[in-house]
Image (cartoon, rainbow, N blue to C red; front, side):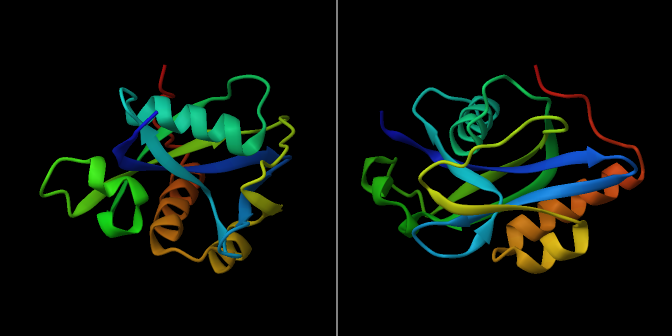
Length: 154
């Protein structure tokens, strides 16, 4: 299925007692740490793409609460092989961010990654390679501290 001209980012978190941990994944192709990331497929909404990408990359066997974040980024279209199939004049694609609560959920990483780590906020922030990932992580961390998660998407 052709790729749609948008990207999604999904920051996994879990509660362990009074603490919160965040999952970071090591990309197989670039050897960098990031959150779940991927492109939408034709006909998908960003929410649907986020749910699919999280399921695929984390090996989820059941749905988990997915929360929309305010964080947005733009990625140059030239990074994507499917650029030629997008409308003329597409120079950047939006990246829509979400968080997923994986408390008491086991993850099984996909072939796209070589490792996964559950880290506290500071360690996760330092491990992440991309600014958009750090911004989304920071927003999620602040929301969790303030007990201000938005309603999960349905």
